[in-house]
Length: 500
Image (cartoon, rainbow, N blue to C red; front, side, top):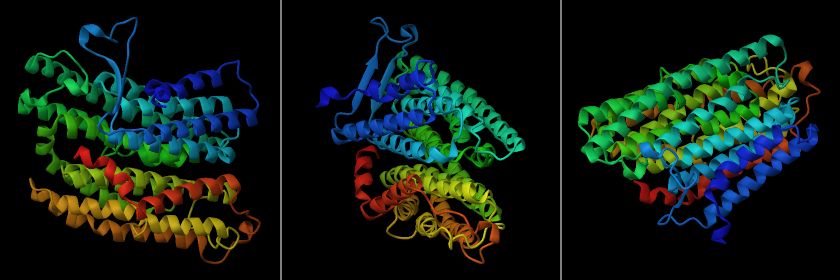
């Protein structure tokens, strides 16, 4: 059975199929393209499950691709190597799942250019999988930059999901803003990677960019700190960390619903994963020095954007700002630098992905039916959409940290980890002051639920239809994940025990 498993196949299969889908050889028939794409995402998810079932934490998946018998850039010690450990395995599974349900969500949200749309979706999946499995710093950067291409077209593309030309222009501007922010952050990140590669060679005599060959303990402390800050700027844009966050609300608001699900569910996690792989794991000494300061930024993320979310009236902007707030919670868990904090951060990555996928799906359904996402305009739609109201109620309750749902576990563990951080009192302070997140998130989420679904139903919404089978599958899948991981958290937590 193990002979059937191939790490390069897992990563590059979506990319190869992407090239096939966009080629003239593949049909332009909308139904065929959509069904074929869903089949590919479904197969990839099942393949990921098979790899998880046969995964041995003591013997992680490792694969190296040679070019004509040589390493990729042999003179610089750069190897095209990939590795899946415990945390990578969780994120690979999460990526496959989110892309699968996003393909289901695309049925009613994407109305033209299906070949191009699904080819970009497949390409983006390959790029993100490359980030989560890269075993070499420069391979990581290659996929980090590759992800910009499909993300730009998916955010700013014309899929007839927008009502007028001005909204299409806003989507294009949001895509440009996303690319500029990420690209500029990437340049600073590349500087950090180059410095780390150079000083690792100078200090240890090892000319290699592989993570396993980097020994940062021999690099001078001040150089480590400079490298760590450079890397944090690049990852901080994608996470995002305030004040590098301004691209996110616009991108979420103007992107199609399935793309927003991927942006919040997976793309933001690449920033958190980068901090873990480079700063937390590779530059651990420097991270201990920087963590107290980073915890302050995490606290600002949690509290400030929660207040901003409460002031929003567009459902998508409420969810977008809540995402920034929740990513601060993930960052705070990493800053604790202990096993509980790491487990809490990874757990919250999964929980937040499920929550945002569900919430963005709800926002997309409401917009398709009512042609608005303004909670001041919406009212009483629970009357005509009782099934959507049921899902919305449960997912909103999960998002505010009600017990028996996954976010409750990760929020409690993050606070415990911060209170047990033994190297800085700043973490304890941040843990205490992050508790209002539970109250503030309850306020803006319940405000959205109350204003949208309760009250008197306007006449223009009286003929609105309830959710379809495709939409039911997406919402039921996300809710099932929230309940399963909320009741059986050890399923995920056990995978991070050896990574602390």
